[in-house]
Length: 182
Image: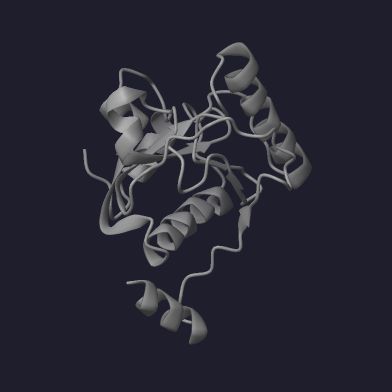
């Protein structure tokens, strides 16, 4: 598998993951997490923060820091709960990344899923198209890099926990994605 990915990269055929904003760029606090995920991961859980939205790199970097501050300082977690955060600026913000177990969906789902959250509240509106495109590109990246199974399943947060997340409008969108499974 590694050889195949390296060959595809050399030929320019591998999906680029260069659109992910690393933690250092959004000035994340250091993580204190250490529980690793096994790869490839079968499930992806989509949520929303249900808080403020952002639509520019500056506002999305600040919002990612706000979410991290809340999770670390108010909830006492080792880092921001999510593996990745999606901004309406069309960027993906690295949370715990591909390798570290998240705290997004409880003890059953966290060890076997990647948690992707959309920053904002999507009960009454759909995220910007560029945000949806960023999330789908991230999923392609995960498959091409061997972090996600090729037959991965997308779940809405409400499919696996009692919650309104990812919001009614975003939930309707992800139900139309190719890999969505109830």
